[in-house]
Image (cartoon, rainbow, N blue to C red):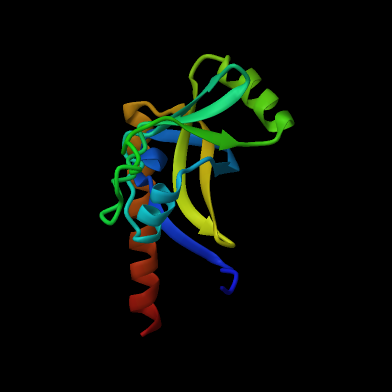
Length: 155
């Protein structure tokens, strides 16, 4: 069987970019069972309520929904189980120090295949206030209006 190459997006957490200031991002591997990988190959997953936490020097991904594999048997997986993330020891140590600071949390941004392996992009993030969200929306709309005006002018 030929080795898969490239980058294929499975799921994205757009809400995280709206609700949090993203300070740093990390790419982590996931410890999965066979039926989870098959379900992900079908492109089915949800990061909506997902978060990561550190326990006993390991990083765990919680509340990420990977539905049961339709062709699976009694060996099928639980859809919202805890999944271990694979990071370097130095990265885990840095995350431990940062998440102890008030206001910081770990949120998953995207789930994807990279060269045939499932990866998750997690972010060290701070929660946004309501006025920050409104300000971001206003900036985005102003930028969109400027681009529209430039397109009309260039016609």
